[in-house]
Structures are given as structure tokens and as C-alpha cells.
Length: 106
Image (cartoon, rainbow, N blue to C red; front, side, top):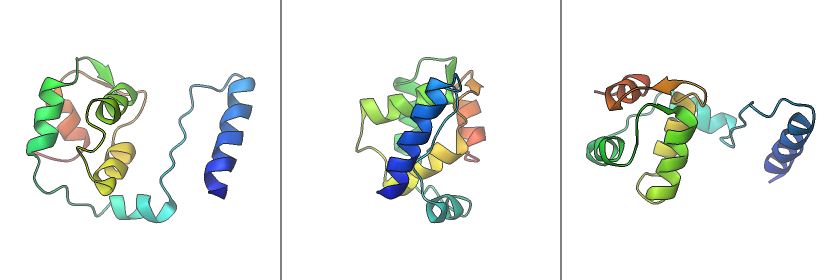
């Protein structure tokens, strides 16, 4: 809870000083560390989502927001942490294959 409050305060300061394009993740250090060893499992829902719900080209930020808005319960907490860590907010993905490559999935 304290980390989220601190992150919100930092975001407010960054916004006020013109650094609003920086991204802040709410994933804890342990969640980010486990994302490196994460195994996605069944990719059917992910592939379907990337093909049907995303309009390309799209930034990583748009892809992550669309995932949360369209089907908020589609992915597990661990999968969402992995998506957040693997997809860079300012990177532009031209198709689902580029997203899968960024996620290190086939």
C-alpha cells in the first residue's frame, strides 16, 4: 500500500514537472523477478485476444490497457505482471507476431 501511495506521489510530481510520459509499474520487486522465469502456459486466449481485440499498429501501453478493459479477468495475475514487464509502453507493435516475439512466446 505504501509503495502504491509513493508511486502515485512520484507520478504526480513527474506530471507536474513535465515528465508525464514515464511509466510506473505497480509490480513488486518479487513479481518482476519471477516474471523472468515465468511460463505462460496455454496461449490460446492470448493469441485470440491479440488477433481480435487489438488494432495495429499499437503501442505497448495501448495493448496493456485494451487487455485490462476488454477482458479484465482473461489473464491471471502472473500473466498480467509478465505482460506489464515484457511490453514496453512506448514500443510500437505492428502485428500480433511482434507482440508474441516481445513476450518471448511462439
